[in-house]
Length: 358
Ligand SMILES: C[S@@+](CC[C@H](N)C(=O)[O-])C[C@H]1O[C@@H](n2cnc3c(N)ncnc32)[C@H](O)[C@@H]1O
Image 1 (cartoon, rainbow, N blue to C red):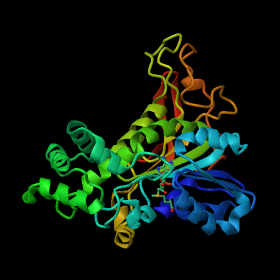
Image 2: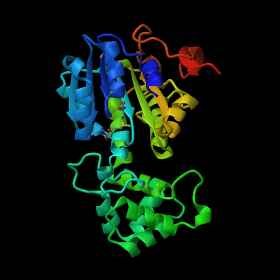
Image 3: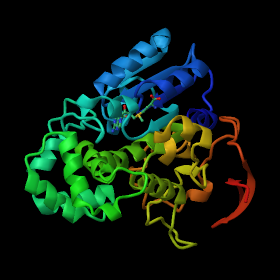
Image 4: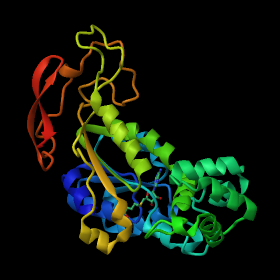
């Protein structure tokens, strides 16, 4: 969804952007084409091999690129260490990359024989095999149910425990396939798909990391800066949707309250009422993109004007200030496609706000 990301991120020459999941550098290169020279891209990935590939690809822009081998949960510190106050935009293209799926020795794919590894960051100690062979049956079932949304989780966990130790992707795929009744195999999907997803999410703490990183990503944006996040399954998308909602809702104290007790602030304006999905031609060219969803939000409060930079800063005990908070000056970024001015009611009366045309 590179074109969609570029359209919504709207990189401007000379701007500062973060690609928090740089992978092979496809999005980063497209951004650099727009911002260099004079602009700057901070690229993050927890996979050192991906970073090396990105570094080669982005060599023509080396003067404009800072690469960091890190988890994006450290985005706050990484931006600060880069000597940047706030950035103009952030991209997160979640999940595993084709580089990771297609390398048998990384152990991400049930269709490629290899060790059960699945670590995005190979310097982390725990592999998928450690979980498969070390967790009690009940915990394994919970993990597969929770992160794979797999209704046969208990049967699968039982089958795995019976066959332990399991050290290869194919041995695990066989165990899972044997545990699911053939008539219940999902159509068009390998029966081990959900279990492999669950194991990958657990090995890499993907959901916890996303939940932790999103508020810090918002905190790193300048007023008017945009956050573009692509998710690949409903669990990630739910976290993103709820975080956007929470940070865009603002103060929920009853009207007329003298002091804010809820601490809510409108940090964001959500620009995509519904997630954007890939076009049929993109799915035809890259079937892995079929479950991608892009949601975009814009930082509403300018940290230069508003006291606190990060959504985790305590806000309660101040006047219910939402209606008077400074918003972004309209010339900072071009308006998002499909938006027009709407008038909505707030506690202090009517005021214009951006919204999507119904
Ligand atoms: C779908 S790929 C990104 C592809 C990239 N947009 C491109 O154009 O090539 C996702 C990348 O995010 C990285 N990643 C996933 N979770 C991460 C995290 N918590 N911190 C840093 N990188 C992460 C993975 O290692 C992988 O390289």
